[in-house]
Image (tube, rainbow over all chains, first blue to last red; front, side, top):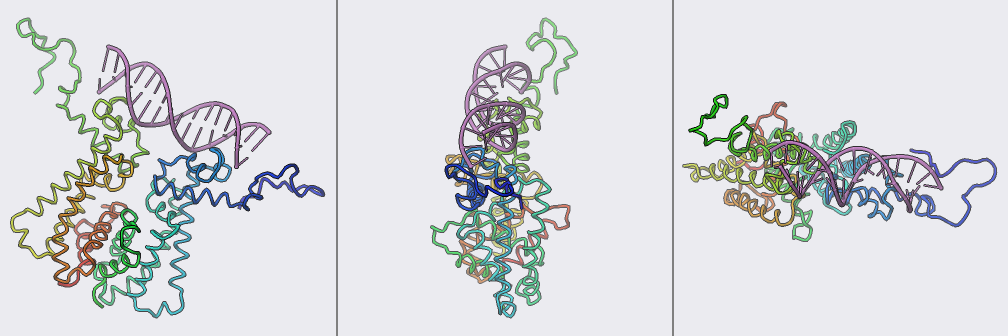
Length: 219
Length: 219
DNA sequence: CCTACCGATCGGTAGG
DNA sequence: CCTACCGATCGGTAGG
């Protein structure tokens, strides 16, 4: 991580800055300003898209002045990448936690898939779920370097699905070729970002049930 | 066939303009310049997104000067809407033609679905398929008025699927609730825009087969 | 449809 | 982190 430029390590005396207390990164909220920018950016990027969101929008949403985001992020691009990286890390953590739950490995493959699907919907549509949708729908705005870096995380995420899909294919519950099935299944889930409205009746449970009924044959 | 400009008009035939031939709207290609703009815009909107595409990009791709698109379209927005409308009209025409093919109504519901799925993939991924993907992925940039206008065409398109899905649900080949099934199925197909690469082995046939195997139970 | 141009906006920065 | 600002870009237009 970066060294803190606000703390010049002087020798004997002054430990703290003088004068009236000012709202610095450290005193205000312990460095959470960066996180506030990430949250605001994720929200706006999801709602309006990367290009249609200005750094001024983000600054205002995080209660800052127009130039201040660039104190925390080198560029607008870097902000986008940080949003996506946080999204993928949290999605990965969530799926790994589900998969590593005691007893999970002994569940029937269909139940293992249900766990993955439910967690995926949660990550896309649940509370605080702006980060992954931004990753899914705004990656065109990334630079090749960044895209390549994210691709690793995405591949890791998708690899969590493969053992389950292979097992289902072996047992005849999933008839499509596993590779294409994974793409089609994740597509069906990812597209829900476009139409899901929590105020419209269906719950995430309903979506999960419908997806399971759609994809799997009777065991 | 164009008149030969090398032959100077004589007195008696002096109906035509004098001087060197100039490229006007009418002489050049009969007004196809508008269509050239639409095609160029669809291509660029798909590749780079609406916001990241400049009207100068589009003009250059259509071999015009920077201000010229505004001779054909009132605004960049109007161009986007025209692209989407053309996309929906062609998609609707294509599906209607498939559905109205003689004998189609007597096909088994599963075969009727296959027809719809194949045509949908064709519209998304086949030759000249920039218009519908733009409609799917850039509608956030439309104005509410325009979005509402498009929504009618979209509803019409989706309504073509409902009788087939209802029949499949009735026969037990589709177990998920029909409304959610339609959203999930179209999502699975629409997402293919993100990952399909014709140079990577799978054909549209393969995609159609995989989708059918994924969604339907054994009859 | 082209030429020449305007006004606004935007990402980013210097200096404190 | 704020203030003040710059340079570039962009949608759009007047006039021909």
